[in-house]
Amino acid sequence: MSIERMVLAFAGSFILVSLILSRLFSPYWLLFTAFVGANLLQASFTGFCPLAKILKAMGAKPDSGTFKY
Image (cartoon, rainbow, N blue to C red; front, side, top):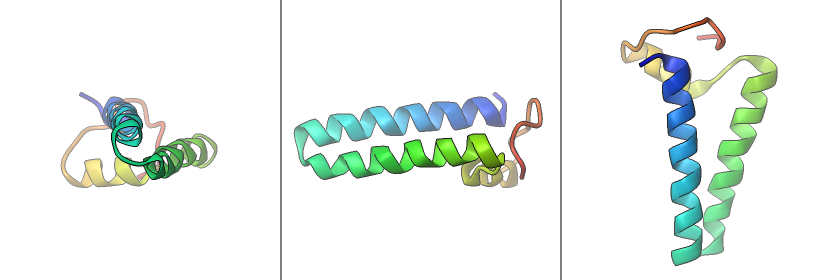
């Protein structure tokens, strides 16, 4: 699996989990959802994604060069 797909999988998973946690425990979990969304938005403009950099350091291979590492 490429870094780009892993980033999308992580982001989607974190958003879904935080939505479930906000329903079960506290609406403050929606702040985490907002953080993930803001990070995705800035990555779309700048091309810099902290998670992609971490995944590359762990040995994952990039696919299309979308993100700057």
